[in-house]
Amino acid sequence: MSAALGCRRSHAITCQAGAAPARPGLRNCRISSRAGVAAKSSTFGRQLPVHASNGYRWSMGRWLDNRADVEVAVPLEVCWTLWEDRQRIPLWMPWIKSVTVQQDNPALSRWTLSTHQFGRDWEFSWLARNLAPIKNQKIHWVSEPGSASMGLNINNRGQIRFIRRAGGCNVSLSISYEVPEVLAPFANALTPVVEGIIGQDMLRFKDYATAYAKAQASSQQQQQVPKL
Image (cartoon, rainbow, N blue to C red; front, top):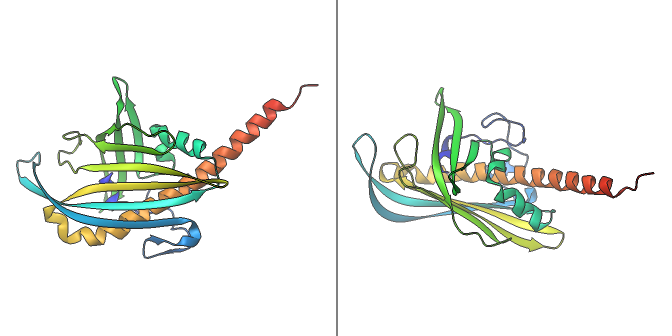
């Protein structure tokens, strides 16, 4: 999911990545507490030699960890169900064009990113492996080595954590990716961009989950109305 770096932020569920303005309350790509979202990140060093498809040798240097969380006035079980269905994720993460579960191995899903940057369209994909979830607590995944469609693999991983609250739950998204040594000087500049993107993603998820829960409750009420 490191590919989110070049995407601009968006808010409306129906908008495309890079189209809509930021939500009020944003300042310098950080989400204000008044909006119900908190974001933070950290970095640490690591050396890992890898080979790009063009034959050059790259040294992978730093892992960047970014997190955003949101309070949602929706039952925890509903939020869990929505995130567990990976193929729904692009509904609140518009920079992800699709998440497709592999028919021959449901533990694998192909994530496809699509964005317009630097005067051209970019689209590439990678495989992610679902790790063993903890029911109603944690969903997590990790990229598969050698699965990127453009040859240069950037290791990444992500997790969603759920904490029950009175009247709803807290949902926290963490995304980590390994930055090549050659891009290390830009790592600090990338952090607020990624935080802004995933912060907006969580706000969109809150809106989506709220609308979904209301529609579900309305449908159940209609089914309970006795026929005359």
